Amino acid sequence: MILKNKLIMLVDDNIHSLKSIGKALDRNGHPTLQYNNAQAALADFEPDTFSIVITDYNMPFMNGIQLIKALRNDYPELPAIIYTGIPDEMIISEIRSIDAIAFCKPLDFSDIIETIEFINVKMVENKNKEEKCLLQKAVSKWQPAVQMK
Image (tube, rainbow, N blue to C red; front, side, top):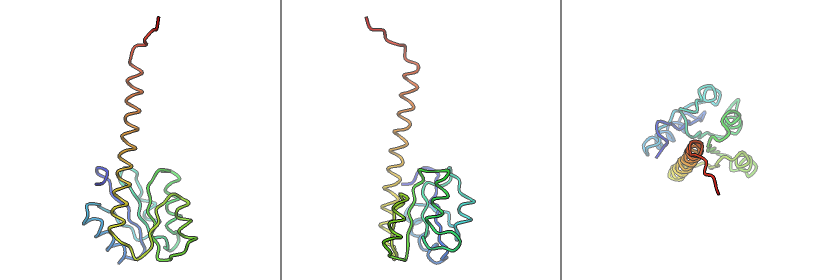
C-alpha cells in the first residue's frame, strides 16, 4: 500500500543498486522514481509526488544524510530510509539522529518493503487524525452555543 498517487524517491549513485532496488520495490507495488545523484533528487523533489525517500548513504558531493537534512528544511515530516555498505556505528547513529531508518548492505528487500508499508500505515493514520481534528473544529465552529441555566 502506498499513499494514493505518490512515489518513492530512490537515490543511489550506483546504477546497479538503483535498478535492483527499484525493480524489487516496483514489483511489490511500491513505484519509484530513481535518481543517480542527490543534487538531481533535491532539485526535483515535490511533496505532492513523493511519500518516502530511500537513499544510499555514501554518494559523491552530497551523502544521504545531507540530502535528507536538505529536504527536511522544507518538509520536516518527510519519512526517510538510508542504507549503507559501511557498517559503522557512528554512521548508523548519525542516520538515526535525524529520525531516518538505517539499513546495512546487503539489503533484505522484504525488510525494506515491510518498513515502507509500516511508514505508509502511520502516514495514513496521521492524515486521518489531522482530517478528523479539522472536521471537529469546523463542526464546533458552526454548532450553536449551548447556554446552561
